[in-house]
Image 1 (tube, helix red, strand yellow):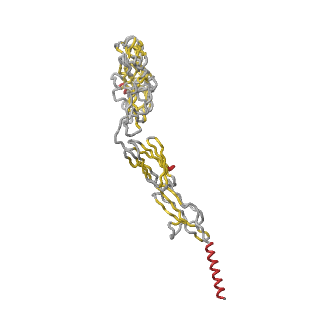
Image 2 (spheres, rainbow, N blue to C red):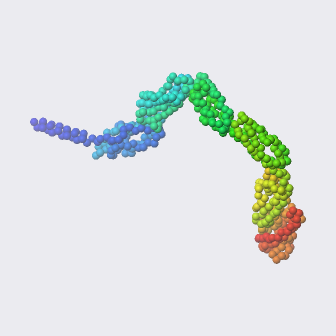
Image 3 (cartoon, helix red, strand yellow):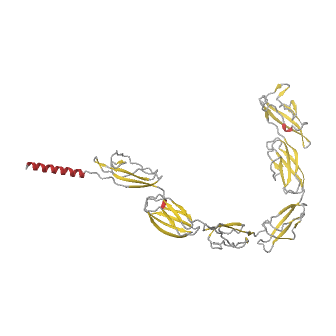
Length: 486
């Protein structure tokens, strides 16, 4: 009896302990059990709901990490991770979390025959695809496929184009909006020409005709440009919808509503000439009162297009400019030795518009040239209309002098002279000190003054000079001063 009692107590305690262990089991973490990525996506660390999480790379064994793993998306495939939570030192069983990295969803034309086209697309885990396609723009023709990898459209004609669209119905899909389209055309065993009735020539003032939507054979297509331009002759290209039909072009001639003549300006006495009876815009017609231009008197001439031409009448003016009005010119050099030295040209002529040039510079309508460099220059005057012979004169002298010199034998500014007058051997310069004492006579074509007097070096100071020279064969004299610096 006593043995039975102890056995009963032992069994009861064992059962009580066993139930407590069951009650103490920790539940698995909560959260997603499947993740989807596409190749190259930026992945985030895995997450799970719970406390004291530990992450594993296998269903059993190994050491858990408290740091959640970040999946790699470099290659396609499926990877399983495991996670547990620990409550009151009791760790739960491992929960599996699957990460799927999928390939991109790709659709492309896989090939064609003369009456069929095929499309291939990557099956990236979807169990169903919806599709639709058009044939030369007609349709769409919808359908559904289960676990497909390709689709073939049969019963087509040569040169027909099928645009195939496929939509992934089941997630995941590695393409935005899960829809892709591709185009494929059946092969051509024979090519055909599309022909059209010619259009034109047309008048620019007429309503523009419409380009036909189909050829004489009934082939549909598109024109580029799609609308006829009435302003110019142009070539238009017809691209048939069916690729077995050759591309064709049509040139439409547009006859302008303006003959395109311009006014004339001629020189008197240049000789009478005949106006062209075919205009620059290729319009034929006649002139009144005559087509012979008078080279003495300005007049107007009217061009009347032939009856079968599109253009309207045009009147032009022929202006006769007097010839040889430019006889001569003179010039003055003002502000000599000043900072802004000017040359002013005066043409001797009875009217006329003239252009002026200094040396090889640009021609200008203003006869005044400013900031002219010192030295000898040439001036050219020409008639703007070309009705007078140009005149060029040389020897226009602009004189300047150094404002100082430094005779220290360093090879720079060691002597003083007026070099602009070096081409005048008869010119001479007298140099004085500030009190009027004559120091030296030099020639502009010589070496110049070195700052000495009777072999003695003179002090730094201002010195005066008088230049005697010729300009336009007129004797001239100029006085000023300069500085000697040591």
